[in-house]
Length: 396
Ligand code: ASP
Image (cartoon, rainbow, N blue to C red; front, side):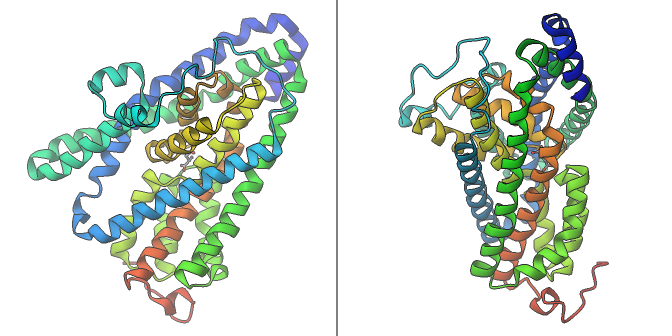
């Protein structure tokens, strides 16, 4: 990023020539969206299969995951609105943007069901893809034995897509270099200062969500000590912060949950599901960054746009893979849905890893928090272990 900025500032207008390197990277990200979301969602839903008997736990978990994510995205939008990180920049979108006509609510709902899922994939209509993936995942689970081979195929494809994402993310420094050089050459280096504001806004909102909101939930809903909770989950938070991967942190999240006295059976259901579909930090980040991009391009958003961002980011967070950079890919989807310029992602890509560290920490803390709340409500939490009075055997 620094090298790109320096080179771009030095080359001036001729830094245009470096843009294709960035475009290659952005195209590679876009290439991942449809297959990544589709496969990881189908697998996420079918993962619930073994635990269908845990219907009640499943419903509670899903409700809490969705509710906390909605609050996170709202907090992100609030911070984006108050801090106005993009207000100092004036970029011009390459293509005309804005939603010329806002479809009515009922039409939006009707359009959620794809008439032709293959066409939705070709168009990249992610909401329709999510709905189809959910439906397919549920029916594969209900199919029983005969559905298993297909589930295995999707699982393997999802793994391949995670790998591909990892490979694309390895190219991020080059892509970021190209985009930053082009940006600094075209608009001047000043364009970057507001990115600091994005980082500060995301980190403050993150801390508030972590310690304020989760602390409140633990105290008010779980009637357990938030202090003890945060002390124990710190290990998992450190892994999440450094690896930027919920999926990679899963073993540690499981370990911390057991140290907090949650039973193995509930934890083994709630945490993997959370690592796949519960992304509060990602939703929060999408709120701040979507507003940043709207402000940078001077686009006014209507109330309907805000609501669309909340709905899309909540759904998008379900489809976000728990791997580094997963949220950046889904940001393009949120932007497209509200009609914001997708090139805006280039601005965020340069600082994405810094933001990813914070959002992944929130993501996994949210998973463990929901696990504790649901386990407590189901009598699956040993409160003496939680309080540290008794030690749990975490080796089983
Ligand atoms: N890295 C995040 C996670 O694993 C996903 C994201 O990029 O937002 O939870």
